[in-house]
Image (cartoon, rainbow, N blue to C red; front, side):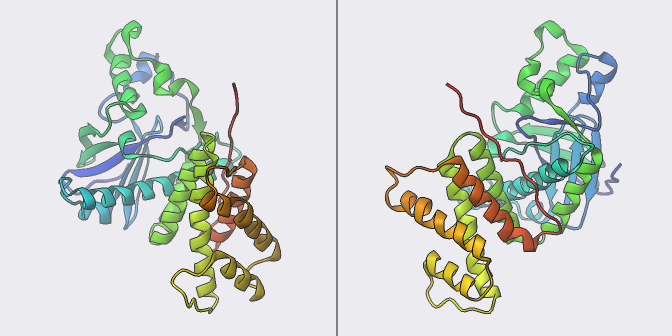
Amino acid sequence: MLEFRNEEIEDFVGFCTDKGFWVGERIDVFDKENGWRLSGMVPEIAICMESEQFTALICIDGLILLRVKELSASMPNMSDTHRAVQWWEEHIDYINALLVFMESESNKCTQSGNIELSSISIDKTCRVGIQGGRPVRRVHIGEISRVRARQQASGWLVGGDEKTMPSVEWTGWDNCTVVSENAIEAGLTQFEHAISNPTLIKRLSFIAQAKSAFTRNDFRSSFILLWFVIEAAVKDMLLLGGETIDSNQPSISSVLRRLKTRGLMSAELFSELDDLRKRVRNKLMHESQTATCLPSDCMIAAGAVITLVQPDLATAIDLRWSFSVAF
């Protein structure tokens, strides 16, 4: 267990994925002997990690508590709207990046169920204050969220009437997969390697948001988010290759051609990106009322993005992109 030597209250941002997961074992939520493990301000903490930049606590029901130390030290007054929004956006970027690594490592682990990331918004979070290793306060940011529903349900499981308890279906506990501790710890380790690179964190957050949009069948939004990363990454690639960019806004087509000519980009990747630029990106930009973006376009863009961010990663990312169509 992590040792908290600071007797001051340290605030963590709490969140969970839409589908959730159990850590290491499945808990029978109606078993009174196990119910206590879900009770209290936070469920039983299964995994802890602390580094110079962050502290993360993973609860047994998939509730994740994250404290990014630099952001915690620079929290603005929430009445200062502009600074507060920027501060929260940075927090959300770190959260989304962490979820990318956790899903990726769970997908790689053959002895683990899979975490399915869902990008987090402010209203899906809570704030948990911890003092000397003990949770002392919990505040929910949004009025309705799975994080809140689970806390309400845990109280009923321990001391209430099962017939009147909040819906377990809404908590998501009934559909949770079991994820190995090794996979979660590996994801935290990858996050530790990445956290000192703010550009990488921002791009991983865009990937998480694009993946969530893809799952919702919002393919236009998914593609646009991915294309933001592509344009920024290829310009960085050109600069790192020793090239200069004369204009503040060089066309993406010229950047791609120069990368291919210099041998900094493979012919295959150039062909994929140039096709997406002509067929999808330009249509969305200039003829949005008739533009069509297909799931396959997003998948190609996602593959390109993973290739472009790979040099900044300690290990490869493995994400599962899925959607469904029904009427």
